[in-house]
Structures are given as C-alpha cells and as structure tokens.
Length: 219
Image (cartoon, one colour):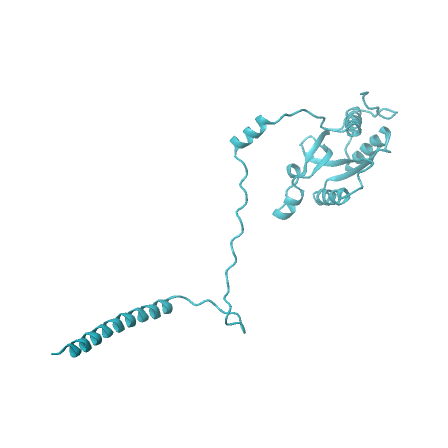
C-alpha cells in the first residue's frame, strides 16, 4: 500500500475519533441542560435573566458580656440625679399628700412602660417598651394607678408631644390615668390632683386630711 492510501486511512480514522469525542461532549451538554431547571424570563425581554436578590447583610451582633465589661472598665462614670429639681419637688409633694391622707399608695420615679404594660401585639409593645414616665402612683398590690408627667418650658419642642401622645394612649388603654403638670403648678395644685384621683377611684383615707395643703420638704 502506497503512502497516499495510508495517509487517507489515518486521516479518516482520526476524523472519526474526533467526531465521536465531539458528539459525546455535545450529548453530555444537552443532558446536563435538560436536567437544569430553567429560570423564568421576563415577558418581552428574552435577553434578560432574573437575578435573585442578594441576601441582606447580617445584623451586627450585640457585644457579649466580656466586650461590655471591657468597654465599661475603660470608660469613666459618674452618678447623676434620677429626677430634675422640679420633678423631685413634685415627688416629695405627692408623697407627703399620700402620707397625710393615709392613702395606700406609693410614688415611683422614672418607670419604664415596658415594666408596667403588656400587649399581645409585639409591634405595639415595642413602640412603648423603652418609654418612661416621670412619676408613677401604684397601689398596695403594685398595680399602676396614674402617671404623673412634668412638662418643662421646652417640652413642647420637637417630637416630645408625639412621644407623650403614644405614652398617654397606651396608659389609657390599660386603665392607667394621666396627670400632666407644668412649671406653673404650685404644690397645693399637686395635692388637689391627688385628692381628685382618690375621689375618682373611691379610695377612702385612713386618717383625716389636714386643713391646709401639704407642703413639700425643703431642699
């Protein structure tokens, strides 16, 4: 057999081999594509693909106790008054009036609403859980009776009135009364509010009330 025939046979065999390899690869690609689920394409835009949204960034985890201790150890602290001077005067006046009238109440200061209110609505509870009232009257069973809020001269600026509206409505729905005092209220007016509350709730005094208004303790 001459060299030309040998070359023809060799070329034919190599071509058949390469064709077989290519056909096998093509069949494999078709099979893989058939197994892969197709993503829906937007109508009228066949050249675009729907790309799934990227997951939101993970929320920063709160520092653990060791990190909190490290921060606290490295920072200075100082004690500060729980109440402002006007709030403290109202507290003393209310406590004196309650004691003189023998009412079974106590006055608490800077009470968080999340500690005295509950709601089946997680969103509603979150809206009030961190809000506070200046003073809170509670009965002998520690049940809230009335919130006392002191409104200073600059209280009605900004978002403070809206925040008070939220607190007031939540307390109203829970049956807790709201007493609002300003810098114009005098001690005898605070005592009068205590008397009005006792009368509205039908709470009897255990001792005879003094003739004059209760005077707050001197600073």
